[in-house]
Every structure is written in structure tokens, then in C-alpha cells.
Length: 264
Image (cartoon, rainbow, N blue to C red; front, side, top):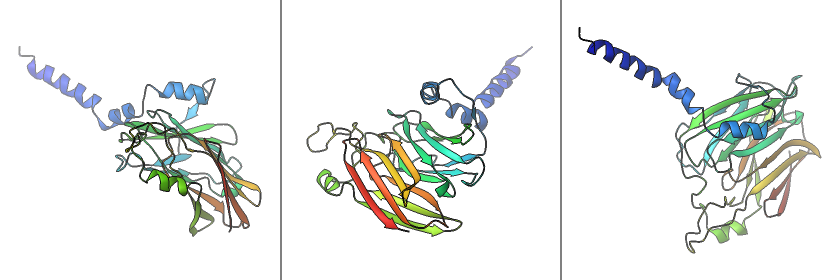
């Protein structure tokens, strides 16, 4: 009896199982680094729910690995009995995988966040939102990009340092919440880049803390590392009923401090 057709059928079934879209998607969300990252962020291994509380919009393949746009959307409002308190942003396969944390507030209206990051190798990108009850809610996408942490800076070093700390605030429209974008001039050197003239390593020098307040009350606070892109941008929301003086206090890894105020 010829067993070749049966063998071929078995092999084909195995191939389709391994390389099915679902299997590929599952394998892409797994990484060797994730268990270590999870345990460092959340000691004791609390349960992390994969539900619809938070969503991540990201490119499948990045046009520029040093400027990968990410949109974090949450499906709960900040006046809900169980709002978002903190958002963790992680790129598993980056040299510094914890991009940063965002502490949110009732003044946001909605805790949506957009920013741009460096992606150094094909990697799962994760968002974990912590609600007021302490529960963790995660979503993740696989992003194809490489070399983002070591890519040369886009601007001349002298010019970048002259503009360092300058800030702009853009009003991106009003609805029941006001969407604002903070732009910070800063080269955000990762420590993995080489000066194209001297061929020497450029020391790390990046925005580490951003605190945004409205008449002294917290709106959003960011704390992070080298994975945020050059000239950081943060898009956030303020409850449309809130008015006053919006202030951004920025610190970088070299100890510099910058501040700017706007009336909104």
C-alpha cells in the first residue's frame, strides 16, 4: 500500500497548523524577554488580562524604525468608577524594553495617549493599563522594524542642542475632551548612536520625565528611557470643561529642567 499520499496529507496539515495566521500571530506575541520584563514590572506575577479595555494602533512594518507612531486608546472614561491610573508601554526586544509609564488623572477625560518610539528589532509592542482597582489589562501588536535605537540623529547635533528644551503645544480639536499635543525639542540620544563625523559613541541624553499640570492639578506624567524617539511628542487629552494654565515641566537624563506654560 502506498503511504505517500497519507504522509503528504499529514505534513500538509502540520504545515498549515504551524503557519496558519492564528499560529503566526500567537508566536509573534511571544518573546524570550517578556517573562523577565513582566516579573520586573509586576513582582509576584499578578494576572494580566487580555481584554478590550485598551487598544494599540501601530504599523505592521514601520517606515522609519526611529520614529514609530503608536496610538493607545482606552475604552473607559476617566470619570468612570474604575478609571485608568497608569499605562505601561513596552517594546520587548529593545535594549531598554520599558519605554515608559504614563500616570493618568481624572483631568484627562479619556486616557488616550499617542507618541513615537524607537524599535530596534522585530518585536511585540505591549500596552498594559492599570485601572483604579489594581487590575492589569494588556494588548500587544507585532511591529516589524530594526535599527531604531542606533539610527543616526535626524538633525545636526549643534542645532539640536541649541533648540533643546523648546516646547510647543498644539490643539488638535475639541469634543467632549480636548486633544492636545506636546512637542519637545530634544535629540533624545540613546547611547547606541555614533557621531557621523567623529565616529565616536554619543552618550545617552534623553527626556526622562514630563509632568503636565492644569492650574497645579495633575493631568499626565511620563517617566521613561531611551526608547522614546528624537524630539518627543505626546498627545493626550484634557476634559473639555477644564480651563486654566497648562504647564509642562520636563527633565532629562543629564539633569536639565525645562518649563513652559499655556492658557487653555
